[in-house]
Amino acid sequence: MTLAEANSTGLHGAAVVVSAVCCVRLGYTFKMSMVYLIGGAPRVGKTKLALRAVGQKPMFALSTDAVRASLRVMYTAEQKPALFALLAEEQLPLAESIAEQNAESRELWPAIKAFIHSNYDEGHDVLVEGIGILPALLSELKIPYKAVFVGNTAANHVETIREHARAHNSDWLHGRDDSYIESIALFVAGFSESIRAEAEKCSLPYVDIRNDAFERSQDEALRILFGIAAKS
Image 1 (cartoon, helix red, strand yellow):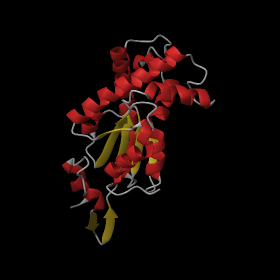
Image 2: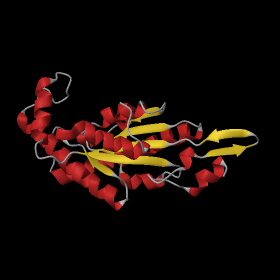
Image 3: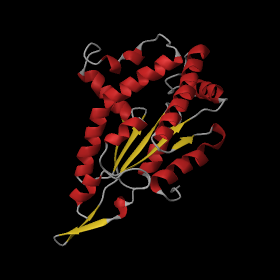
Image 4: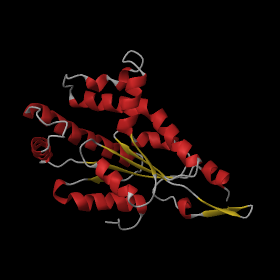
């Protein structure tokens, strides 16, 4: 199978094994690249998981937060309202907040997809992490990928977020009042439930990152991506 033939099949998902296939053509050996995707709710450890994933192998990595920040510089709220809707201090109902977040993610997707394809086509392994990765969008990738979605639906997540915000000056919630922190924690739980349902519908794996078993939960997510016990 040539590289072009492998791309044209549109194979994807956790069952994809073509990343281990070496294609021989004109006397040269090519190793198939792989795309790794980590999506899910905010404040559940996606960035830490991505840093551990990069430790598994050299990869071109991107956070969807960086894509959002760049596009907000390039466009105005009038041009791309979905990019700015969540900047308002007004606390929206949970369902509306989730809908606004998903709209923002869809606005980010073309730029994310361009990053993935351009680096994959150059023969690089690629990692993208962030809330901007939605399960329903991944069917648009006609190249091999492995994905995992993470969330946190624990009942004590509100207190965990509150304690972290109080103890760390660098936390963007540091100094915010308890009612605002609680609204963020409730969004995390609600978005986690939403992303779990969407991942299940798309036959993609979801891992609940438990507060009382953080490392073990992350290890499970890494095993989904790499199929082996994670490097420490």
